[in-house]
Amino acid sequence: MNEILIDHTDGVMTITLNRVEKKNSISRPMYAAMADALVQAEADVAVRVVVFQGHETIFSAGNDIADFLDLPSASEESPVWRFLRAISAFPKPIVAAVCGPAVGIGTTMLLHCDLVYAGDNAAFSMPFVNLGVCPEAGSSLLVPQMMGYQRAAQALLLGEPFMAEAAMEIGLVNRVVPPAEANAVAQIQARKLASKPMRSLMETKRLMKKAQASSVAERMAEEGALFARMLAEPASHEAFTAFMEKRKPDFSTF
Ligand code: COA
Image (cartoon, rainbow, N blue to C red; front, side, top):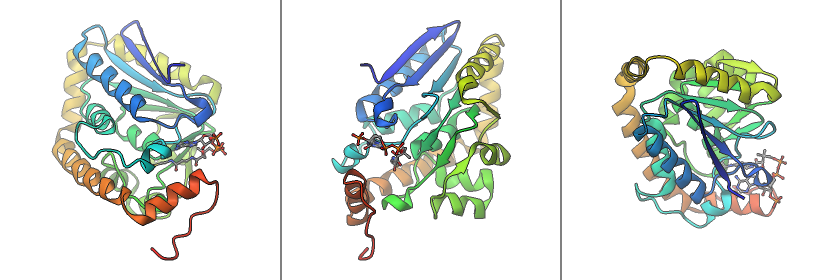
């Protein structure tokens, strides 16, 4: 079955994570498909808005951990890099509908979306430290800016999850709705955006992001290089092996 579904209706490209049996964890081919879709959406004048959505019970468990154990390429042409570059610099509006767990990149990709609608079952987490790696997608810069340093430390150092209402309070989420309604609400908002003048939308997004654009790109590059190095270190190997073996990691010697 196709693990990334792409639909194009009424000026809205909808990208659905569709690997529910693996909690919508994102494998390299899935990153590649999403990166290709964003490149196509940017070039195609018929696409005015992009929507990301998952399942009512799960948005995404983040990067596929088996892929992490494989030591993915750190090249800027690797699928995850192409996806992060495409979403962070995407010039048209992006709307997300998030229900259930949104782990790792499942949360950090939302920092690059314009409007986020969450089911009341949404649980956001960035457990990079617990996995022996470091933040990615510009989150080490954007998360403290968004929620303040101490709350960012709770999310990024302790790796504690936060729920939909808290995410709305800190500004990561626009509205909390029943999970069964989240995808529909995102579609309604996307269609509202799609009916507006495209140049105004794109210039407004560009202007709002302008002050940050180069520092976000620079931070993403620094995080990406460090993340790749840390994937080859023993702490992350222990964390990922423990996950696959369904046991608690033992960091006592790292
Ligand atoms: N990569 C690969 N497989 C994953 C995965 C991931 N990130 N997350 C879940 N899965 C797989 C599990 O191994 C399991 O596979 P199996 O049925 O073959 O054993 C299946 O998806 C169901 O996961 P499970 O953990 O049993 O579901 P749950 O409902 O108890 O918990 C989560 C859901 C999302 C809370 C939990 O799966 C989780 O914490 N995943 C890892 C998140 C993570 O650390 N991601 C990396 C971020 S950088």
